[in-house]
Image (cartoon, rainbow, N blue to C red; front, side, top):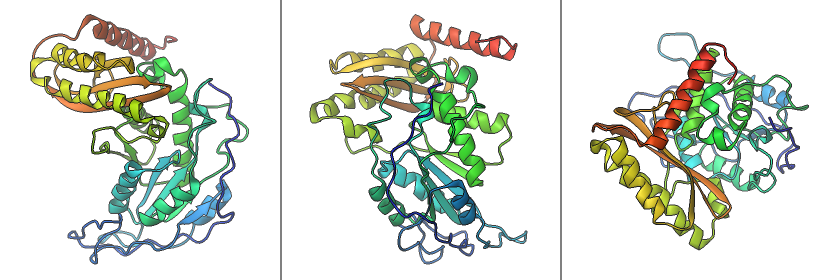
Length: 360
């Protein structure tokens, strides 16, 4: 696990203001408005910037503000949602916030570049930090509170969470310790914010699988919602790291989404056909250095030959590592190619060893 490094100071208000009380409930016909709030039949959108907390104590003070709304005939309460981010917010994050706004009375966004999930030589120091612009986006989307600490764990935690075998494959094989650091931060944030529901993007498919399993295995009292990937008009999945791409590299990066589309088109012909079609697209683009291209079970990332599946790809374009995935239904016959079968076999053996208490 990489040692925790100090995050860059983030500018903004030093003290919180009161968190607005949850809005009154709406009728089932309430519909989402363009800014992430709702129309006249729903809760009004916030105006002005959200309250900002910099420390755990400030966050606790914000979230302890009284106020709840009746739900049906039951006891009064308000629904709280959280959207966890590392900042550099874009339209993909806005869609997460809008999904949260539709479900919740109070929406909290966390902004923190988590050093625990960056390995040696990764882009922790140069990861984009755009706090003022992030606050503007949060204001436009009706966020109630932003938690933007300089540190979450200080000192670095001695007790951490492990993703187990789910964190050893795919991204975890290339980034050892990444998912352990991610889960440690997400678990801590869930304790601090105490949300009823948390929203994460499906673009980070392995992250979503790990978080769902953590919540189930450790009995976190929260619902995890996956929000579909948001793409630019050219098909590129939105990512804060897209800012690193020059014009030519961006054109090369489009091969990832084209490959996923080509693979999806062969879902009726079986796993081997899906992977072959996707691989051909990637091989035709010299600017793309593929790390992995594989099919995986959406629930445990194990091998899959028929039924629901994830087609996942990771590649470097220049110095920028990009990931993408698409959900599909495999209906055709035929095993996966040997290299993917071997990857799946290794993953299954690791999962079986973990279940027997063996070190993996």
